[in-house]
Image (cartoon, rainbow, N blue to C red; front, side, top):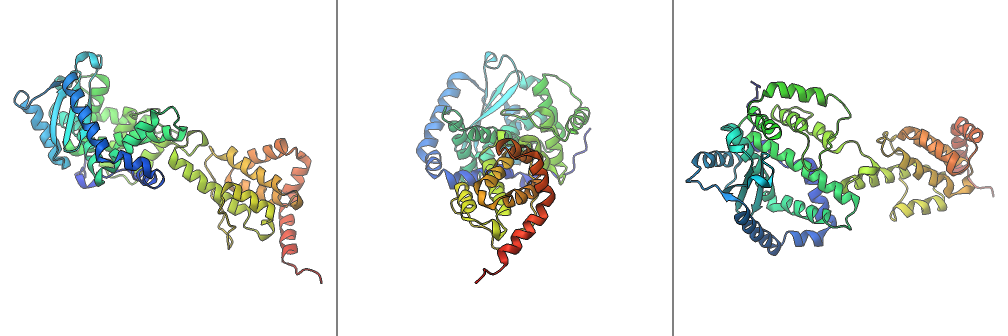
Length: 410
């Protein structure tokens, strides 16, 4: 048995930081689309389509014929605080090729759960509560906070299906789906009151086994997740080992539960996999790097300030000295190296002064190697001259600072 502390509580089940940040971003930056997705007309059209499709394509599991199943559903709902009317269905065997699964279709005040494959034969008691609770947690998420997370989900699905969608929108849709599953997994633990049946149900659904050893699998998950570079490859659901470890960390209230989950689902910040929130972060890092470079008054030439305002029209150099910058993720090294090279070339009248400052900044940011390579290749700057500027950088910057502060000759 796996020891689960009495910490599996409904009050701990809150939207994850990524979900909250993405909802705030879309409300602020896509107000027209948000208004449409949140409209009563759009929600009612969606509800009508859901009800019709389920009646046509599934077998309804009425409470009179399946009292035990409905009892488990009601207990899971009670533990989650879900008061919606619950309707259960069994999908045709051909719909999923016999594989076990469950899915929920949410409409206001109604939770329609569709079971697939031999779930009712393979899962027992608390395991069924966990699976039903996982699906009901979707409903809980969609209905809380005036339904904003359902609006986010519908916006992202519509955007991802549009051939004009940017890569950042597709990344956001993928990550929101992954986080939604992580939220629902936590709901499964609340619904069955413990970690073990939630993990057991997850493994059985994934493997089709009738008996599993949860402790053994959690140890297996720890072995896999010991890799510090681990990142899920899932498109809508994380791998089972990721989900199992995430549930364990959460039920045990481990201090690094949220940070580890973010690392596993998002990975490091990388220019090639940016979502909308990542674009904001890169924008902030870019602005910060430019401000670091131009914080010295003698580098605030008209040409360099004009170049900075090509990135940010409202850019203004910092009024006081900034603290040293932190190194940036490796996935941004080439990008920031290119940004710095552009500034080195933006004002030839400053001679080697901008290069001297950029060399120090590139070192602090962690992108010194690609920066120097680009200086030599893109600017055709001789390696010998680059070595000289690196050696004399401090003296060059001190001299420029002194010259800038000296009063002009009368």
